[in-house]
Length: 214
Image (cartoon, rainbow, N blue to C red):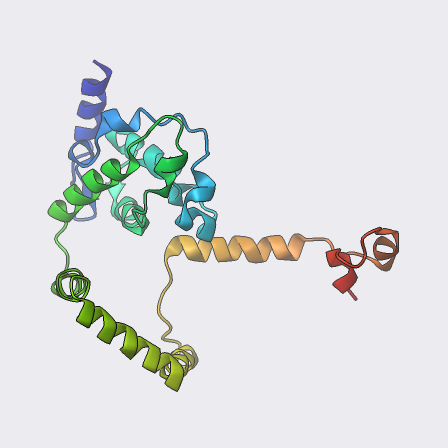
């Protein structure tokens, strides 16, 4: 059976170091076969719209999970980071013509990743504080919102970011965000500039972006 062969292939990639995981148990392989890779989910995904990176889209994540299950890709730290980058908003499910249960796929993968790689004490404490203390309580949510608003109004957050940037200690961004920023800068450098002749020949000079070019 194809599923059994894929499961066996993924099992051959069982973790040999602390940075890889057992792909056979991480992925619900049968559910990944529902995806037809049409791409209708791309523009509904906030992480794809932010980064423009295929692996940060629902289609890309399904392909990653299928590759792990088939033994073509090792479920390493990069795979775990991409799974964790998903917001699990499930907006992609509303536009999927094949009815892929993407949320169930992500929950399965994340649940097994959490069991395979326990989070640090600080991470567990923060998650407990956020999900078990702050979110269930309206009073705690109100207090947190008031505190954040106070920091914004007083300029503390802006000053902290400025000081951190000067000291070279700015918070690191997600690696896919950095790749997207570099790609955006590269596209801007390659974009041709409009000339005066182009602006004169434009019949919609009032609304055309050319009119803003010197």
